[in-house]
Length: 222
Ligand code: DC
Image (cartoon, rainbow, N blue to C red; front, side, top):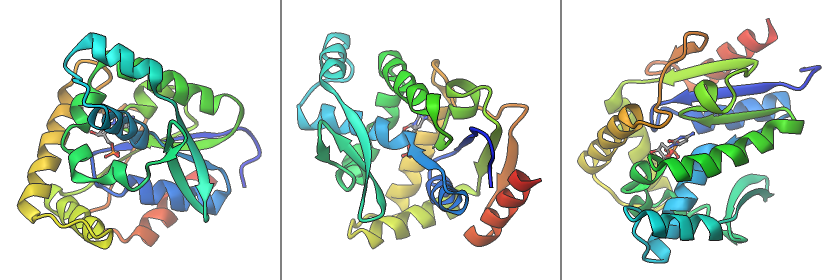
């Protein structure tokens, strides 16, 4: 479908279905997918597991020197590895969700992960989702999408997703965590979530994931 190296950036708020969309799109057009949020989650997990304080810059630097993140496809599923351990399930836990935005706001963390993300896009086509992909990681991306949805609908979707994974939580907790993350993601000093002028905005509050995918495919194929 694509006859040249293509970078597709998908940015937007937490829990508005960016990852599902990016995965489905990657499958449809047969290119690689990178979940940049998983990388910030893996760093947050490292701080938790090693009882390191992310508020202490020397502990941050010690941690970053020891962190190695890569992705692999396991049973057809894109899977995150932290220092060669499969952490795909753990990085989605509420304990990681509760600190990940603070961790993602640390400039040293962003410098390391952004360099890794750019490396991944150097040779091959890919779709990457996150918060600063179109604005900072790949400012020259071939396509930039900015995905948004009503916050209550996003919280409902996240709650269902967590339940599906056997993680119990209340609507209120999920909603509050989401609002908290939106606030930090959009107001942090280093590479906040912004809607760039050249991004195509898609509000999927009332769109099924199939309709959203069809819409994006029609834009890419134009
Ligand atoms: O997409 P997600 O919910 O898995 O992202 C986890 C956190 O990482 C979220 O608080 C936003 C942050 N993040 C970021 O700052 N920049 C990115 N490119 C991706 C995620």
